[in-house]
Length: 469
Ligand SMILES: Cc1cc2nc3c(=O)[nH]c(=O)nc-3n(C[C@H](O)[C@H](O)[C@H](O)COP(=O)(O)OP(=O)(O)OC[C@H]3O[C@@H](n4cnc5c(N)ncnc54)[C@H](O)[C@@H]3O)c2cc1C
Image (cartoon, rainbow, N blue to C red; front, side):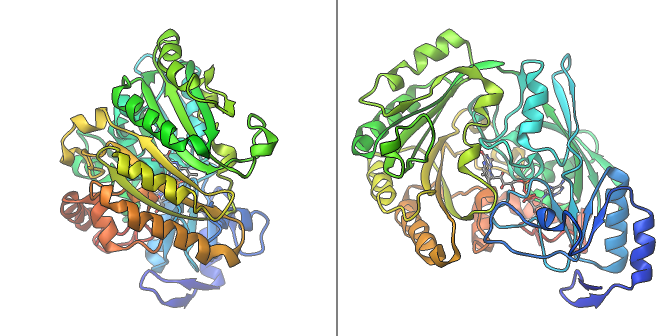
């Protein structure tokens, strides 16, 4: 069988070597043509189309150790797939041995200590589901099918960021299989350099097998959801957003977006496909406070749809899932913003009006709060001056539309990047964004990451990631 080596060459893997490797595994090892291979090799973004030589659906840490040892001995290119949601397709590589962690989705909650241990193949929804049994949650993102590992290793933000910081600020320990196939623990006390590096440095240092998160009391019911207006009211709605966001208590997180209306049942049929503006909200404090806090949104102008209500937090965490299916073509541009100026709102509306596909959107996420109160070098995720995230999200169905949609996103970004802090989110970088953008994402913390990389992975064995040299 032809495989890709770590040095970028093609090599032959003898059948006898493969057979003896297989004997030491518990989970299934998939080859092209095997049932499940296609599902496993594909990732969320259909722009990425790569074919690993071997896919190991790991059934535990022992499988991961066997694979790392085998790949190391054979000098095989290794890649790691968590939720497969990285837009740049970092989870997969042609000719590689892919570790697919999707069979490792266990979660254990210690409600008394307010700690959850999650296996690295968990999706966000797996963790929310188990922690919410106890009325607890940690900071996770907005789409429940995203993988916890990629999200956490790159930073992570969501509705609870304003209260408790980046996802990674809520991590208290990780278990990691290193390049020499050892299982090590990374915490503030054990291997603190590795622990620091993992909280923003991505999969550069090893295969994370499990993550321990701090939990906080949340829900199980919150006030959350979305209100939408026609695009003709965009200027007023964005002005409302700016004012409310500036004054909002940290229990309240506000997101605004413009996009063609999806065919959602809560939006009237005649508006489907037409440009709308919307505010998405989550108030995770007392229900009465939440209802009061969102009343100015619900009573504003003439909404065409309003599902901003009291509801289970776990349900709110799945509200956007339907808009982000696996298998579409996606291209994003993103920046951190220090605030929202009226001029930015004007440009935001102008570029939304030029959207080329029914699935694309422009979004502003509010994140200011807890993350701004921590030193920049607390962990490599940094960007402690970020108060909003701008995401220009191109999404479409067919390859023939690639150029038009990519150009739309790039033009909008070129026009809006003047409002940036200068920083960007590493987990939102597309595959055409290189070293300069990685530096923008990691800033001064990059040099310390390089030192940690040279200690824990001197050969650069873990390289299918935002690679630290
Ligand atoms: C629809 C959508 C919504 C999103 N929403 C948010 C959001 O609200 N907030 C937010 O912060 N981000 C969000 N993101 C970005 C998300 O954080 C990144 O895409 C992240 O990389 C996804 O993690 P994953 O495990 O699914 O990715 P994968 O594609 O599986 O992996 C991404 C990278 O992490 C590495 N990796 C994965 N698992 C491991 C492991 N166990 N050990 C070591 N390395 C590993 C991979 O090798 C790869 O380099 C969103 C992305 C999408 C597509």
